[in-house]
Image (cartoon, rainbow, N blue to C red; front, top):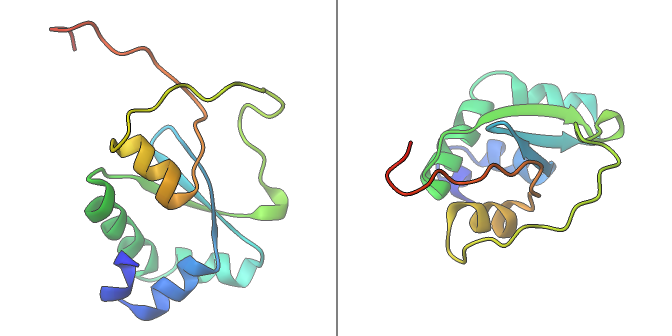
Length: 114
């Protein structure tokens, strides 16, 4: 809904997509038709989505639009239990609000490390 305040047509395109995941800082949106995918990629639509994501999640994400029928996760076939996620954190929000799923986990740096 954050995209609606910038452009209702972009929100409508976003509503026609399905979030497929986040891989290496890239939100992957799936579309059922090539026409809708192309519309999201062209013009200002992708910029508005990135701006709305930054507003809601507080993080810059790149955007990749794919056809749902052609997409497969990069670690296809891997079955993993979801790691625990901090309630109210950015990852929990992405999972809950955007329907994302966790594709990679990196251990946190020890306190004081970078």
